[in-house]
Length: 258
Ligand code: G1P
Image (tube, rainbow, N blue to C red; front, top):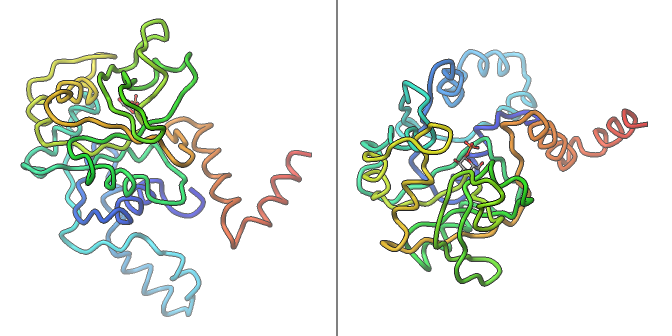
């Protein structure tokens, strides 16, 4: 995204929300993620020696200290629920947050930070929600809404990727979650759900009624960077918003559109 990788936007959002410990669930071919947060010693020395301070400053990757990051391998791609479950021994018995980095959220304030505010008031579990076109329900986890004050929505049910004809609403879960550790026990017992995958949604649904479960309507724009159009749109949106690039980029894009 412009000049930093997608994963770093999720880390920045979590850092802004006060998160101090990170677990990345990775898999085959993802070692670039593990390397990314290391000090790029050789490159930094070279830039320093050549007096390239501008380039050095541009390497403003998230300021994480040794010990703040752990990596765990999913080993086989069995679904989002399985990926979360792979971190169970690191999460232990504490509430935790899940951020799906593919869901990039461009917002004034950290979305996870806003969710933590809701969590502090209501406890339990909190997810991020957005309205989607009725014909797109089969792409998302969809909620059965209860009390709704226009911002926080009580969640009475959750279903993964329902067809529009059976979807309980058009309120979809965005890839941000604050969850109670009990979800790990549910994941341990989980069988495969929609798409033959171990779905996080199915195990979350089992927490409803046992601990508060609320959704916070998203304040911002969500880009699905798992699709080419989403990734390209996000890159354009972030570039246009950059004080150092915006004007020049707008002119370049306008010229392309003529
Ligand atoms: C995942 C979740 C889904 C959620 C979506 C948000 O689906 O399973 O509940 O609505 O992320 O992006 P995926 O995009 O991995 O199919």
